[in-house]
Amino acid sequence: MKTKVNLFRLLALSGVLGAASYVASAVTPENINLTVLANKKILLESNIPQKIAKMEIKNLETFEIVYSEKYPLSAAQKTVYNLSNLPDGNYSMVLRHDNLVYEKEIQLSDGATRLVKESTYSEPVFESAKRRLSVKYANLNGNKVTVTISNGSDTFFTDNIDITKGFSRDYVLKYFESGQYYVTLVSGDRTYNYNLFIN
Image 1 (tube, one colour):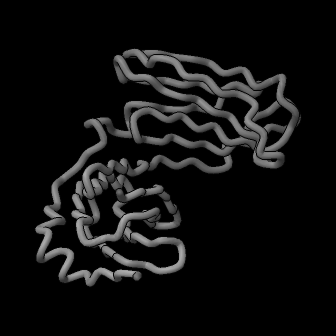
Image 2 (cartoon, helix red, strand yellow; image 1 turned 45 degrees about the vertical axis):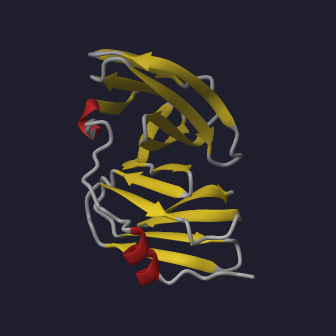
């Protein structure tokens, strides 16, 4: 039998949603900078000591990942990426560390590099154990956020979060039947999914 959980009952009986301010490891976007240089080169500058980062370069026309590497960032680090061996086209350069993402879309043509658009955003952190779900989100762009829990066909819970800053929320799921569920967080035009299994 399917059990749909009433929002008020879930909150009142479980005592969840104690909202707390959350900042992604106290790291601000100004700590990392990607600069487009001449001759198909990109300069990465960072001022984040002792952090492991992942750089990924993807061809946006074929969706092929042409470069992927994990490496430690260090204070006052400068790294130049030479993209001269790549064919002309549109690419994305994405640098991730912790749950922060720095993304630049670039166009390579005739030996030159042009910046198309850039963005910095955070990715949520989902954790679950013992019928509890924790959602942490830095919300760098101040978007309204919606968290839903469904089984793929029915939505059992929706939380519309009007806090336009980082938050950490805990959900008690003791009234949910055992099985597979899907958690979706929507922030602006970005959607993040998390598979949740309740024993």
